[in-house]
View 1 (cartoon, one colour):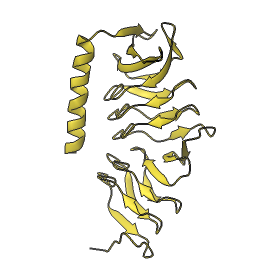
View 2: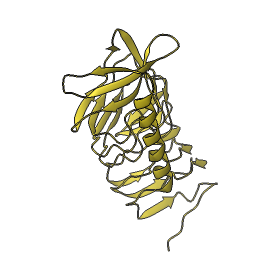
View 3: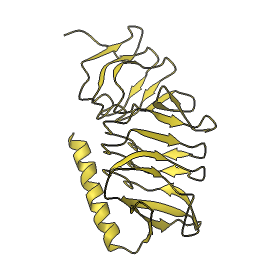
View 4: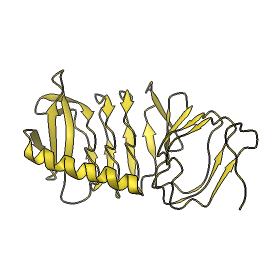
Length: 224
């Protein structure tokens, strides 16, 4: 939790800097506002989002005649966004871009995405499906859980999913913070294929048991 607090503190500092710096702004029909700057290629990068009440978000293809190709670090952190869809022109999602969004229930990742920053969807307590367009060459989703394309790296277990989770046997890496903030999961089973578990990967508040396949050469578990 300390790490999340530090990250959230960074978000607060970011919002302050957005208010003071020179950025472009775009107001939506529902009164919400995007703050953006310009990438080196002339495309738009969303750096912050402001809204009065919780709302669904459909990232626009263009803002003020600039194609939106990226969502910046912390852009939506801690906001009241309830769902998010992105157009097929988005290429990157920044670090912690949608972290700590308590009302977020679903997110759809298009086939165009080539890079998702660390902890992009961390600590979203009600997020259930993370859906990836099957045409995406870099990422995939299985039962709402986010993986790389080969499903060798487990990237994000959505915080709203519940029950007992068995990590697929294709997985070799459980990425840092991948279960962080999950408040409904009960147990996690780790297969023999896993060779690396990142920092705070299994720090889920509701987790009551972790079991490891006895054939795993790197990790083990035992009953208390």
